[in-house]
Length: 277
Image (cartoon, rainbow, N blue to C red):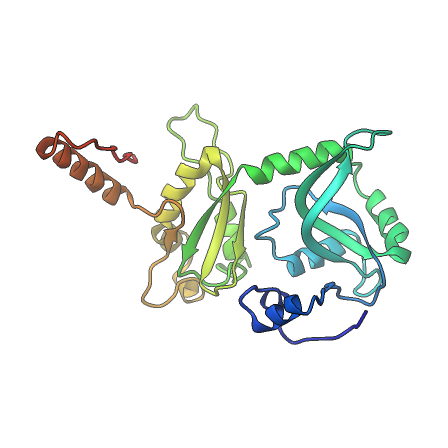
């Protein structure tokens, strides 16, 4: 095993289009990504509900270190996005595999890190937690928001960030008897500086898409004008993109076009476009 340090990011090294990775694959050189010197890594647990494709691991490591009361360098660990297997029940060899954010450390530090976790609130059984994690993550849908600056930027005198402001968004209430709840599961920066991804459950997806389409007006009315320069991209309004990028007006016009085609070409089978209200 050879240990080396690189200024290139891990994502760029592991990119299939990267000539360096192509050379590694051709020569059967395998990489083991670790932030600290260790011969063997062992999994000590996983984070429930975190999306393996969108979590900012460095920020999560810092937050987890604070939750455990660890000083920097006290106990070395890292977060890794990969599959993990847990036993379905005690005494049975069958396992349950799923994608998750894994907490890894060296073998000699595993017991110490375990004890720190045991000092936290008592968790349920690991298998049940794994099922909960899969149910949460598999139900999340992505909405990409373009032309927004870093979600960690401050948006008011209280010191709240743009991310906190987006978490305040609630589901739309049809009447006073409707119980409103948190609209988004999580919001993340992406590799593109002005593109963000918002994750929401399937049941709230349409509501989230509608509100995020109107995000510019929401932010203009809720954020002091002095902070607009830290949120918006000059000359470009925030806009959503993803599996459903059509606006309400474009969906309506598409529906009108279908009606015209049906009237003038009745022999042609038509698939009506769904209207959004």
